[in-house]
Length: 381
Ligand code: NIG
Ligand code: FE
Image (tube, rainbow, N blue to C red; front, side, top):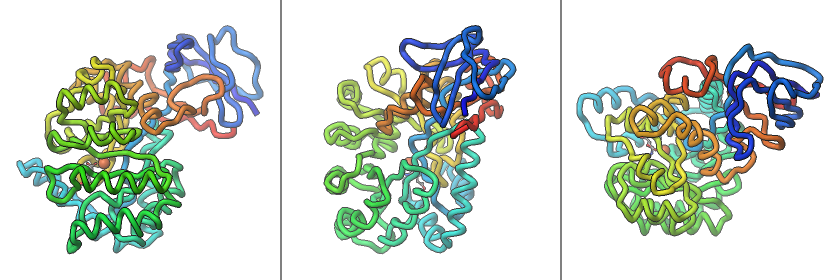
């Protein structure tokens, strides 16, 4: 069953030859894009959808989110707005609430968060564990995440849990916990941040990442969020797919990101919600690094599921053009997940399409906070 989509005022494909088209149309069938071009040249199809002059962009790829959690940290947010600094210590309260929640409670919370994302144009989401921090609770988080996405990430090395000895916990994460979680995870991630007393230093992070790689997982790193440090260098050295945050970078970090194939994933909702200086996207782009944008949706540093907000912040606060920010939120984030089947609209790619109640992609940054983006249902239709 094929569907012809017409009435597309602007079609942003991110495909090197197709570029952006006006007065465009596309055909999709069985979940894949089959044809893209000018409306006047459109081939016949079994059914037809007229978007009435709206823009279509690749579905947003949210390559960094922590959605399996219970509890509420709005009071911590209010304290931060009153001047208290973020250091990761609040993660412990989410861990306690998450351990206490039933599978069904967590499943319902997760489903609501994924639906919220989809309603704002996100078609792929990566979901991390990291609020269980025991063998059983981490494996449970990944099992539940795997019910809604194939992009599951084991983050047992989020923080050292209360009452645990640091070296014993690193051994547990790299040993028994990894063995239990690897069957449910595609990726492994570490919060490598020596500036936080709760997170992990370079040696600890290396131990966990090397064990994850030996278990067949791809590598991701939370790095350089609170201060300059070893996260970026380690991620590039180990060939991680992505290093995320990148808020405080040395010249050597920027150079490493420019030559390596590790994507720099920027999470501007974190700087917004922790009232911190934004990462310097311009410096990374001008150096030739690949930049992605993601929400980091989590209860501590950014409880926003909105990729359009991240695009607007990247444009308004980080010196990215609207086109660069949209690319980073789609094709760039697909690279951060090492995916070549999403983030671009072209024949053979997944028909993951986002429609804007607007004539062009410029409105994503031009109309901040306005719900103009939604995912178009194309799967199998
Ligand atoms: O990506 N930086 C570490 N982890 C999360 C925050 C987790 C939390 O505070 O609950 C982040 O910002
Ligand atoms: Fe995160």
